Length: 571
Image 1: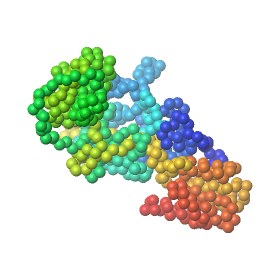
Image 2: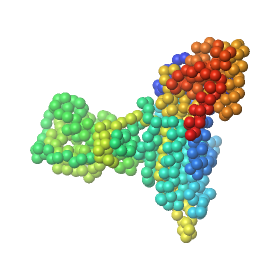
Image 3: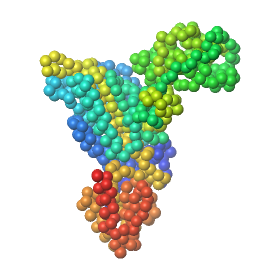
Image 4: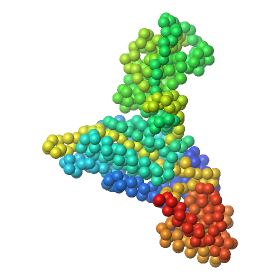
């Protein structure tokens, strides 16, 4: 490809809208352009990288015996009503009507569509197991699209779905796909973790793992053990729990005391000279429209996902001060569990307290010497909080938990019969008896991979693409396009490398060397060959983008360096 004809415009400054480094660099380097909030056009360089990701995914999906299909993006509402998700999926589902007023949705995912397909095509155990996948654009009406391709309203996704005769078969399909994901992300050279996760709106009757690319811009918190292999999303993470020894004051009687205007944890800690861990914090939530109280220690945070899953709910919302005033008849800050006429969920760390301080359900008053079970019921005690960094691992019980930020790039689920039962996806077993298919689903955010790779591979000058994903492998830059020796050398090198299967971009623009070098650094092609005044002696400057090492070598040596690098990758 000749750069003079390539649709490529680089920007010297980062657009003000771009917060993430990956977003800034993809805009500046001419990989993408914004059409609307969360909706982007892939320019030629961006499309070439995306195709590299697609190729890796296809190769590994085929290796895992998955078969590629392409399903409609526009899905009839009737299917979503069959599964029960149409009314509960939420505002992210883009809904529309055709000219006949028939309702449709633009697919954010394809569980319903693929289940309907397979129920009509497969009726015998002889055709199972079966795994289908597609690479297709998805649509989600994000409330706040941000970070470029990391949180968009239109994005490219690989989604796969497995159908098995039994749970043992699902387990085999699940781990087969899990291994394929490890190979995919490894080939994309990502620093990632496979973590235990919550199933979210897709749902799961078995295990589920998220694949997280580690990056400071990540919106998810990854919790890992420094000793063993335990890793989980913060929504799912647990810690080792040890029962406290009885406190000396545990026999003290409960006592109400005056706490004028002490509404917050910080105010109580400062005024009473106590630790936040001594406080029982009572928070009121609306769970599917019903008020529920959740108790955590003052040094902990409620994990809303754990609460929602425990109650089997669809929606959860923290009640604001006005709502609390309306429900409880008092201002926020003085609510407590004693005498509270609500369903109360008690975190196990609160249940283990011997002597705590809690709101007295009376303005400007709290209770001291509160002891759970003695002073209030604990019908619903469990894990309802976020773990904190530095706690002990729940698996090995020795390692310390450490937090990282992560970008979700893939997710695998054991769906079980969640969709196949509702949509009547059945088959006849070997004895002729009808059975419900056991399903799994497996997603990868292909467009997200571009952002994740750039977040992990860049410097102050621009992007540093790994060889496997680079839009071109080699950037040939003749200093002067009017110098016949330089242009002849550039064309000979280009022809030779292309014959070896190397993808080459040649900068044949009549631009100053500084402009060419800046653009080359920005777009991030792995190898650069600069052809200057030494061309008459058959010498060129060979540079690796990642380490910026420069070597003055012959034409043949430059080509050999690249070919040797490729051989080492494939070895």
